[in-house]
Image 1: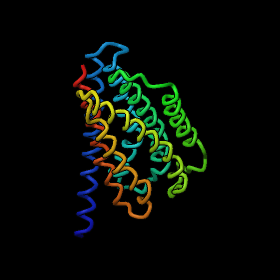
Image 2: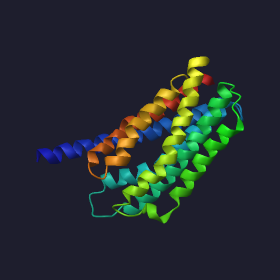
Image 3: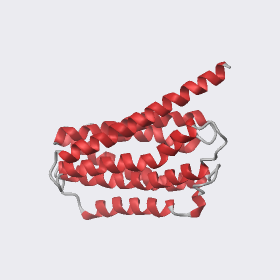
Image 4: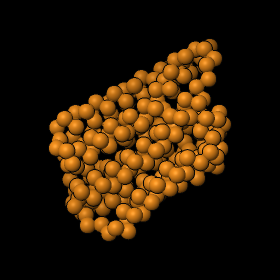
Length: 223
């Protein structure tokens, strides 16, 4: 009985957290968009924030329904498709961050670095389309979870270094984006590697999401 009560409490904490997360991100995206000029850094921040919230909703909304539903309905397919969409939108999210960092800090970065960044993003997206990912399976291939996340991790590190260098050299109101990216990956990688063995590791997605909320909220400092 005590174990059941604990699981129920954790379930509702996750539901409230997920709804709050989506609300904050999408509301912030709307407010940012209304207060910036099209094509500006703030505008890119608004589009990036909306992409984050919209992409995550494809996974979180089915997740919320699965948690609420007391029937035996199987949400494996909808959750898998949601993860697939989120994987792609998160990759594009980092492309936006890369472009925002270059413009905000006025870095004259050689084309080789941008080619590397876009190449990593493209590789990650292509890998997501391989059927070996088994998106709609109950127990998808752990090997392919790791494979598709290798270019994503490298992409995140490159973008993080860009903002870290910018913070050290120029400072500014986006100086902590590098730290938020670091926190997000510190929380995300254990989930990639161990959630299939220990489901509770999945709770690390909560602080990971908080890191992304922090990034979105930093956008208000540049409008």
